[in-house]
Image 1 (cartoon, helix red, strand yellow):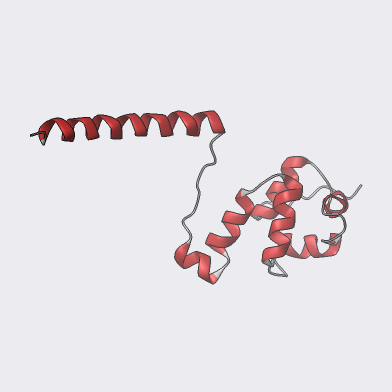
Image 2 (cartoon, helix red, strand yellow):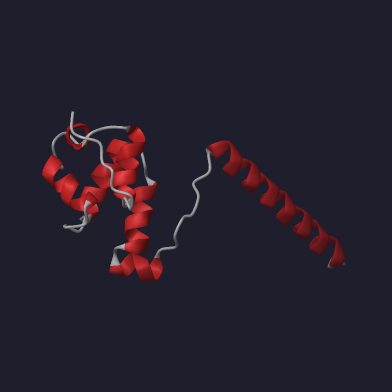
Length: 119
């Protein structure tokens, strides 16, 4: 197992790997070797820019889909202009409850408008 990083300003990709507490070698294995340990190190140390396919592999290997949004909104010229950043990823029950609440509000507004414009 490799040595533990002591770098203070870790980029998003290294933070995601560190949260899993896995080495770069293990991360490479998690991508079925499609990302080499050396390439992961260069992406994390920012001596090499990640390509979209690299980010997809890391997002899947680390179970961190937010890496894709990060890449699109912070590193991709098209995404910087057209893709909104996702600040927080909520779990499904919370999203469902928020959606139901908003639908209830819309339904209430619809009923109010129907009552107002009935002939």
